[in-house]
Image (cartoon, rainbow, N blue to C red; front, side, top):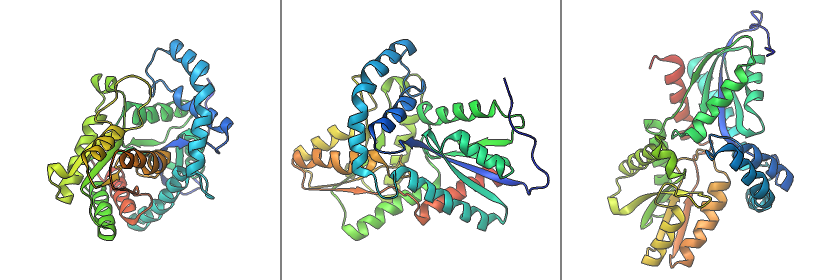
Length: 339
């Protein structure tokens, strides 16, 4: 195996690096780019735990022949002049976080964006930090709730890239922040601010991305951490038990995923005559296809067609000041204090 890169350059000021990682996005809405993105994503054994040979046949023989065109059409609905919402929101978070941390600590810090799948890659992000002479790197995946399918997969890729480096920087990895007070406060305040401007709903639904139930049965803490996040937000808002609920979205295939399902919950509420529902997605720090299109449009239709009267999606925190403040406090805890 060949090892790349020299030792740090002592003629360049050393600095701390923060690698801010999100899930990923295709380069464009073309079917070819979406197919490449989906192949990388769905080939990850952390994401799909089906035996490899069987899954290879299903992925290449069926899914990648059908799903890219459908997914490309969905991406076209959310794509903007700035490109992918997930990418430009994450980049905006990185830019603001860098300034906030530098202002607070008076120390050289570089925050670099990377995507687990697609571009900019984790390898590119680490190389950017190496070129900046970052001798300490804090890895911050924007996954508030830990799952092997997201957080652990990110660790796998970090490890894979660094196996090829000759000199390894001091490294710290944040594996979750589902109950961090600043994060909970920022989410609760964003809901409260939305209600101050738009009135309050009959019920609030806190929708998280789902994972197969079998993953939780094997020990994945994701579902428990989602429930903790939802409960803490409801407590901050002073909601009674009948004013809110948790649900899980984005399931695919025929196996059982974490329940209750978002789409089925909204259909049921519509049929029960619930007048207005607001939905917030606390597991998505940046708006993306799953929030803008799936929650903002598809699930809106489910609720209204079932009999509901009014439906509101409350945007993700994105690069809001409250979000940046919560991330600044999180990085401060891991970079400048013993925990």
